[in-house]
Image (cartoon, rainbow, N blue to C red; front, top):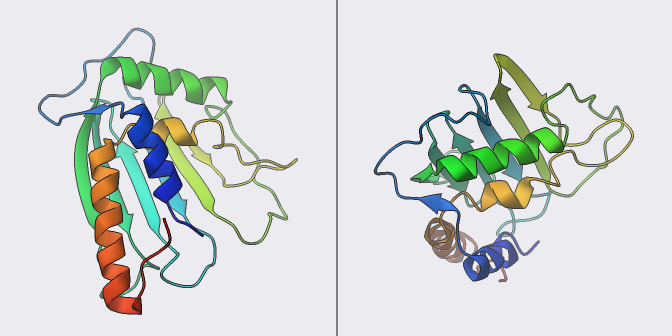
Length: 181
């Protein structure tokens, strides 16, 4: 319910892995040339102003884009965007984490997923294949749990700070209060 505030504070303490958007990242021998992904997060079913949705998209050249919607998506609700570049080293590391977490193979979605709570999904491209990662897998668990923080850390902390500041201003204007955090 507190939104991304604890996560953002943690990222600010650790520092970001993203870089500027001045140049792109060259391919590497330790990851496929076509490795790319889109990672999406939606807060659970909570009343405004406590809901937010965001996504992170990273292309094979390391160029990235983050989008942040400070409420349920609807007409008149703003979406904030930032661009960044992921270093070759960070591209290699996130590829290895996704591979080691079993995300580069088919994952059977849970037939009876839990109700409520945040949801994260991903679409990952590697070795000419596309892997759609469901929020919950059959047998229990959230397949993206092991890589979520690392993906979020690819976006520079200043961008998350900007998203949260604008979210607070939006919520104060629309609902008379900002999310706690």
